[in-house]
Length: 459
Image (cartoon, rainbow, N blue to C red; front, side, top):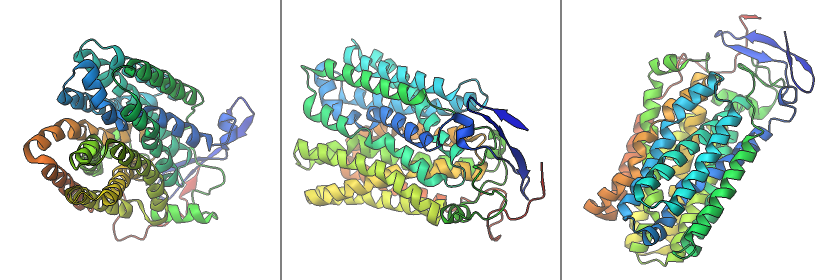
């Protein structure tokens, strides 16, 4: 069998492991797309940075938007909630269209770029808050969802043998790409220049997403790197350890098959809890710091530190999960995220700035690390062929967790910051308890899991 690319004709063959899973081997990354697969890590990382400021820097623009448009703080927080809701809502249908070949990765990124621009234009010029909800909450949220789903799932397809670190690195772009915009929105933008600032940021970020996405390309279904033997333990020690700790899915599960295993529902619930805590922390980090009496510039620094550690933590935990196992790292992340919320309460209560910065950073680490864990777990459990759709089901939990901003404002009003952050910490710890029940489908708990060593046959 042969496949034709713009560069040359490459031969591939299909082999079947003892579980019946098919691997397409023989083609290199250069054969398929004319460049090394590392570009399918770098470019998605850039694309993710292009959409990050809409979520992670939005809270820093709240005061200026309130002053310039006379929108209520509650309306602005619900606008962010609408953005998160639409970002999550588009993940499953966009993934389905991508896997069916009806929405190429490049076009998904172009649509994301348009949505990004519309979001910033609506914040700058919307004459009424309802139009800002439509432009930013709906169109920008949907565009970001397309970019997010495309970038995250692209990595797992190109690095099926050690996806944790690569997925975490790309996922990190969704956080630390916002760092300069936290300072711009909080320290530079005001009622006199907000339109110029928002339009400039929108044009720049839309261009970043569009240029990065123009080079995207998916590998063929069942593709496996030609340097790694899918049927025997690989020579590469990094790949060997990763496959031992996180063995490939026993088969390529369709979305319906994945749902019937029950694991999707468990992952959905855990991600809903932990990402809700993360979104709540992003929305109210600035407020609890100012309430504690810390200077505005210091609070912005804390928010930037949170974003940096949030992004870096995604790459670090992804790398660690390749070494020690995805589920084990997920359990520690839930614990860290939960305890950090109580640390923020304590440091704000005693007005200790160094501790506030430390616990903000720890919270950022935990809040960011959950996402690459679930993205990689989905591919580990259900395979790469339908990963965009399967992860879309799991990621749709943000439809609920997105309420972390809007509902969080109501909880803060009723219980104060201590009650709200305490509730967030308890929710994260409970998610860790639920995650204990996660097991890869098709494998018995008592069976020793090793890379496939004996094929049933070859095709």
